[in-house]
Image (tube, rainbow, N blue to C red):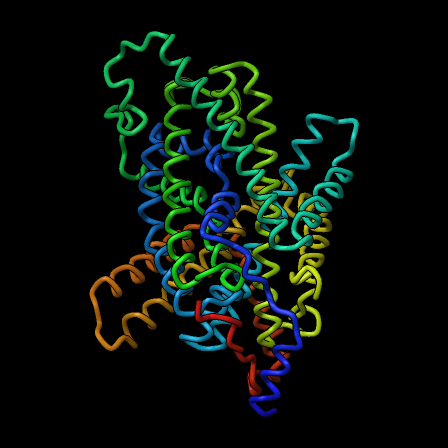
Length: 462
């Protein structure tokens, strides 16, 4: 096909709409990570870190920043909807790009799935008369409806949910402050103990807690999947990615610090899984229900945001030919979103939320799903750091030390975290990767044929 024909073909096919500002990107990033992201595992974090939850989240923020910077820098080089899939494929090779994209698909698919599971389980607890399966159907439909309407509508919904969660966080912090001010705390080191308690400080405990605290930041990479739908992606993706990590980190540290002051780690929680809501209840009794509902809203927002991100990732893989382009590489002409992908993810979440609890062997399937999210995310993180090392250091006209240190440190941090995932998560995750490799081998007749090609994204000059 001639260049003129290629141009005409691209003009005839609808593309993604550039409708997102820097503010929209930051809101999306904070939503997909969640403004109250440490709340679900607050009790376990207290236990692992031996009372140093705030410290572990602070360390985790600095540990995650090199990867965040690598994502932003690679989005500057390749402002494409494919994100890590495109970065690795362009810089290192199509096969590794495909493997990275396949791992990232698992990350986002399961992020949507486990969010639907958790919200449906909690709704069933609040209103047990309505069965779990009915809540799964309802919340899968809501997530899909929020995502399929178009990027501007999704941005408005994200802004609304972000504002609602911000109100809950502010109310909790005010209630916690009033509780602390109105209750005696004469013990030495009361205000510094959440960061450093000489009685329980242990480096092994801090490292173990930090590996768990990394969950606070999982999802920030979703910003890069919107590169073709934001203005000035070469600038805004980097800024939004780094700011999301910092904003979520500051919010999370503040929330956990306040909760630890209200409920000191020396006191046992009635239930580790709901420890944060018990701390909120002690600060102000109505917050037990309010925070519970806020967590439902937060994870519903995460489900929609992850669905938005994976739909764009699947579009990038479909457009390149890594997945069937007739289905995954299509854009709806009116809404200008990859509607097929959105619906596909919604159906996956619906079916998975009904089946995963039985497959995983536990009550909700949330623990296994969460570990698998980390498996896929860390595969993508390692790939992006490797791509940033190749692009900005090995192939750079002038090699700078920062372009060596940042991606290499990010890669090593992610490798250690990946290696320390639970054995069951590693087995399931490797099985998923084997499935993807088998599909790639079938598609290319044993990798003897061309796997995929990367088309330039539209309007990348902004």
